[in-house]
Image (cartoon, rainbow, N blue to C red):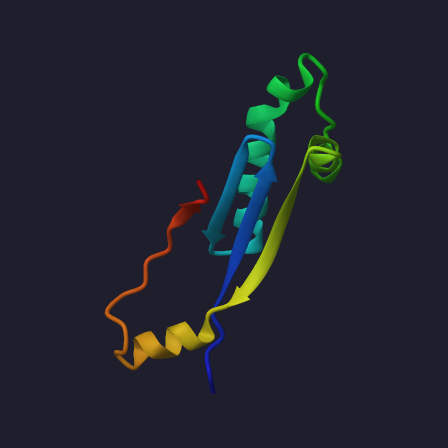
Length: 98
């Protein structure tokens, strides 16, 4: 039986920031998105307290100013090629788009 291997892709497009990151899971990508929003909240909203609910906080942060995407990628073929020795190694990296 073929093994299934997935990665989660996080894309953040904001006025002064563009990021593409590869994560092991959707949960990891979500946590990274929360950290990003939390780190920039006061710069964007001043002393306004962020919503406690994470989804509400993210929606408020990106409303009218940017977008984000968390997508799941199937890396099964890459995994098979590695297993077959067609590639020497696989590295997961964070890619910055600028």
